[in-house]
Image (cartoon, rainbow, N blue to C red; front, side, top):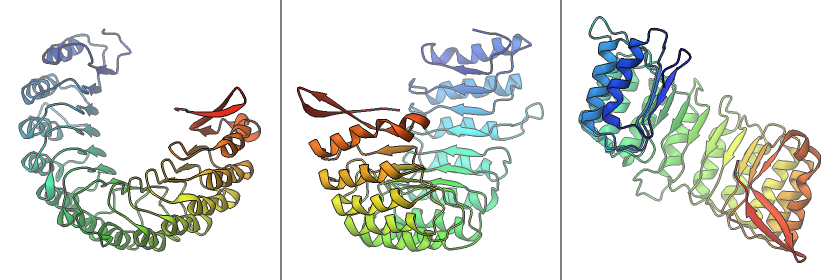
Length: 376
């Protein structure tokens, strides 16, 4: 288990309560430089976390990455983890740069304990609090923290039960006070309004210099065609945005056409995710134009968009001439014989030369085309 080259401990079968012993033994072997602890989906409790943190601090280990995703950690546990963001006691110096807490039971109180430490921390660059019941009170603590923290570059707070108040508070700070966050995932919140709240507030942030965001995840935010138009306007000419995720929204034909026109025009986007919307055949035809002309798009996700043979055939035609796309996702649409035959013919040329990924694998049985989903 312990070798001179050991850099991380990934616990999957060992009892979690024994991790503190593992850490202590790692220190005892003087050549070991342990810097990563990964405990995912192991029913880790607050008590387990307290033991682990105590062992790390007492040993003086320079832990840079911690992932405790999908466990049973609550407010007390995250309070213990927050100790690793301090330079206390004097014998311990925090170097933690990545903290993954997604899929636990952390509420607003735990969020408060964590963000209070982060206001003074200068090492953490990546924080994932997604799928925790932070609510808008937790979002308020996050927004206050961002006023003082200029180190975090990646912030993942999707599916945290925010209402419009919490959602807008975070965006307001990015617009008015924080210039360091580069990647923001804030989708799947409790936005009850159907008046494009998410798109309107996000567009204001995108249109306010300095332009810093390069990744934005707004999946599951109730964005419709009007919101897509608003985002197109905000992103036209935006100098830094590379990845936009609008999956699981309400974007239809006209919204899809608006986003396609963005990609054909003055856009820095290289990846667009539109899974589980409703762009249909007409929207797909608009993306055919993108595929024919774009030289910057590398990833396009149009899975489950109610696209039938005419639209799918158009996408395949676009891919025959495209020179930039490296990954195309179209599974979950309505493939017929014509579109499967067209996609089946894409296996050669640039696809084979550079390894272009397509998530649909056509095959023929007794002269009839069928399709299987392909995974990366």
